[in-house]
Every structure is written in structure tokens, then in C-alpha cells.
Image 1 (cartoon, rainbow, N blue to C red):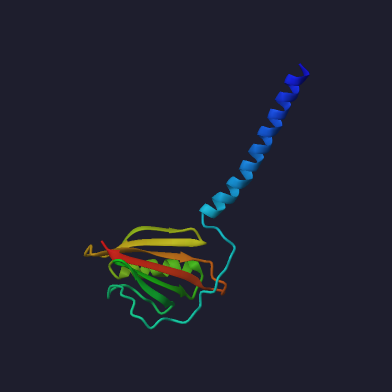
Image 2: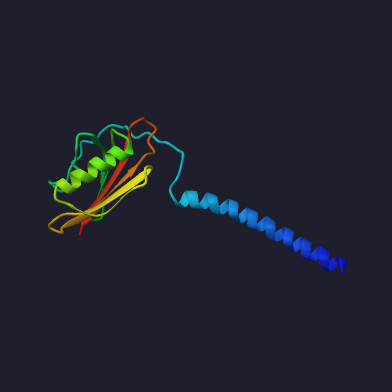
Length: 150
């Protein structure tokens, strides 16, 4: 009888320890999965002189500094930074994309990161603007634009 009680007690303790360990690691992985990180990086680097390759009507406002342009297959990738906080950058970019005649397919602002998915009126190109508030400089938002044939 004592053996059965000790075996049940040991199993209960093992289950509790395992559950506590799982709960802890789940929190860490869900934070990582959500893209939450306290690491800040330098965003304000020299502007590139390369042409963006973005459509002529695509808005490139003065607050946006383009630092890198590359082509991944048919997709144009543009990286840079916006000289304001993320909420302001999101609002202004979204407004300018709409004013340029692009349809907003999806948009979301989570105050640490934001996305604006778009498609041009002619249906020739589509893409996404991703904004991140992970810059080490104050009032600076990282901008990542992908534009591809629709």
C-alpha cells in the first residue's frame, strides 16, 4: 500500500514539474513567434543611390529614406527607415498609398509592427509594406517594402 501511495505521489510531482516547465517555455516561444523582441538595431544608415524599381506612381515621401534595393526573382525588395514613430509612419504611408490609387487589401497596426498590403488599380503589381519599431534611434521606424507582379 505504501509503495502504491509513493508511486502515485511521485507521478503527481513529475506531472506538476513537467507542466510548470511547459508553461514557461510556451510563453517564451509565443513571444518569439509574435516577433516581440527588445533588441534594437541601427536603422539610420546611408541612403542608396540605386533606383527603387517601384512603379512610377508608388509613393516615396520625404520622410522615407531608402537604404537598400534588391531583386528576389520578380519581386522588388526595398528597405529603409521613416523619420517618425511607427503609428505616424503607418497612418501617413497608408494614406499616401491610397491617394496614389492603390487598393488596400489588408492593414494592421499593432504599435510595435504594422503591415499594409496593397494592389495597384490596374492589377499589375501587389505587395506589402512592413513597419517595425525596432530602431535604436528615437522617432525612427524600419520600413520593408516588397512589390511583385500580381
